Image (cartoon, rainbow, N blue to C red; front, side):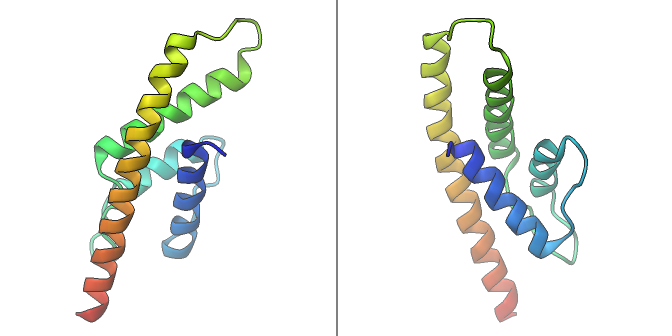
Length: 109
């Protein structure tokens, strides 16, 4: 499972606990967008905009790579995406830890 898949699954699980999941065909993109928005009185943003953008770039690449059967892989691009995936995974980890810390802090009141 790719870092983008892991992130999407984790975000969907968080969203299903905290609010309703998007149900349209673009639910992965909408899940990322929703996770980057704070809901006043409910929760802080789960992701920073830079994390959302990094994960969305991975989502777009994955979509393209899974549906473009007619071309040979561009290995330089794959290397670039792999580096970006490491950054996105680090950013995701940072954001989810910060989100969990904020929830714990709010719960302690």
